[in-house]
Amino acid sequence: MPRPGDGRGAQPDYTRVMAAEGGVRPDDKDEELEERELDAQAQARRRVALAQIRQYPDAVLRMRAREVEHFDDDLVRLAELMAHLMHDARGVGLAATQVGVLQRLFVFQPADADDVTTIVNPVITERTEEVEVADEGCLSLQGVLVPVERAVGVTIEGQDVHGETLRLELEGMDARVVQHELDHLDGVLMMERTDDESRRGALATLRRSI
Ligand code: NI
Image 1 (tube, rainbow, N blue to C red):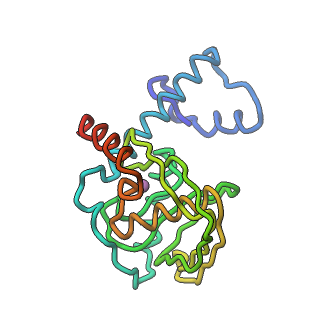
Image 2 (tube, rainbow, N blue to C red):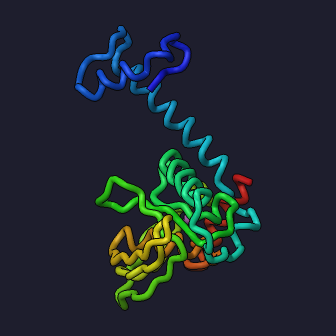
Image 3 (tube, protein in one colour):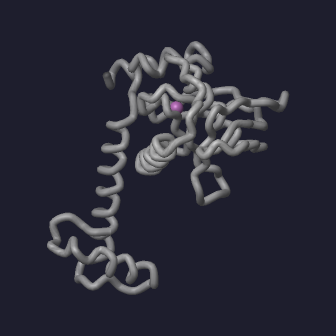
């Protein structure tokens, strides 16, 4: 990637090829400084992404999204935008509601896959009786982690971004993420899924940051 301020922004491809092939970058910067710069860039991208994601107490986060009826280029572009924002924000899931679009779709990063999965009009058709409590965070509730009980496994059905039928059997972290994202499409935040004490603590954190 091109680095700002070094006057060689026109040669990013060269740098990338060198990095991909394990070569040394053609400059005299020490590695530690380079790492710090990359880290700063990643943090900057994260801040930019988070600024485009609706934050608590935005009223849209409480609204129910509508079923998607038109599978067109706009929908594909929306899913791509959401995948980019999720990636830059270092998230593993993002619902359309969180970018202010009240349509029923979300993106998520499966634990064992490179590609982001988009699910449109998702419905959980099966869930295990077995549940598990684990801490969850949310890109719309920054700085908050609360314990949430979720089914250990779920079957989720819906469509992909082109309207093809999709059916996924998920467990563990993946199952947790899709349950969290589906809640967003119904205007439900993880605060409503946690215990009273954790909720009070989370609200205090959020009040400080508003
Ligand atoms: Ni969330």
